[in-house]
Length: 222
Length: 214
Picture (cartoon, each protein chain N blue to C red):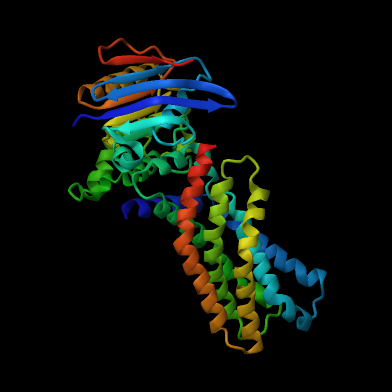
């Protein structure tokens, strides 16, 4: 699909030229994680207990923060109308936009998490699982979040509404994502958790593009 | 190929006010249809309804005799819509902007011309709208009129039968306006149709038809 590839290339180029927007969620992630040892206690044993949950919550919020801009600039400059009027299937084109969002938000967050894990004294042996669970999980987060972003793009201050819409749907991903890291620390099998994360991703990959397309159509009608 | 966009008993309500009611429209190949009316009379809404963006209306639309819902794919493959906002990304150069539109329009599926041929076409289209030399300048640094011209380059770049243009003359200089008018007439003469709103006085032409709103 040439149009899908062109949309991927276009969005990647645009975001790489505006590095600040790409760095924002990463900086937020790093800041939040840095503050916890200072505020709670530098005791490694205590930190190790809460580290998986903290890392996952902070990564989830960082991903959520960056969602609002997903369709915003396209809506403002009129490209979104053109996207909707393209003879190509809108679901495929929006999937390309979501893929770019994951590549430049979810994936960097997943790669950065192990480094921040050191700061929280995350026990050895769980680092790879942390990155893997985040990589899988953030892909679902991007897909689900894009539905909310598409629904609220027509609103001037859609940010809060977007969080309210999307957060309940994020809970399963958070539970199994943090659960996977916890299981790795305890030495239990992580396969079940990762399999469920994969299943969540497969389900959102199948359903979310259609929901995003329908939501965009509703938003442009407003 | 003869094309025909029909609307029957079209009505649109905004904020408890009827923009238009009982509107019957026939737009055929070889016509330039100008929608007229004061500000707020529903010109843009009408264009958005006719181009299939707004679904909040009463009445029926037909494309070549088939109901719009059934013929939507064929309709979109023949439509070029230029809205109020030019749809130009300020972070991309005019060439990159056009590359996206070219790929989006599906023209690139034709293997005949190859990648270089497409770049050639984009350069030609930009030269045609007087932007030679600005190909690689970020669109954000161009003036409003130049950005509008980048959008207008799509008229040459992606051949489409039905042009729906919302205020295409905005921010364009006198010379550019004359060029664009000639382009509209040429398009109608070669069997396309043009649906346009503008406050600019179009030169009288036997192909021109007016529809007044409000």
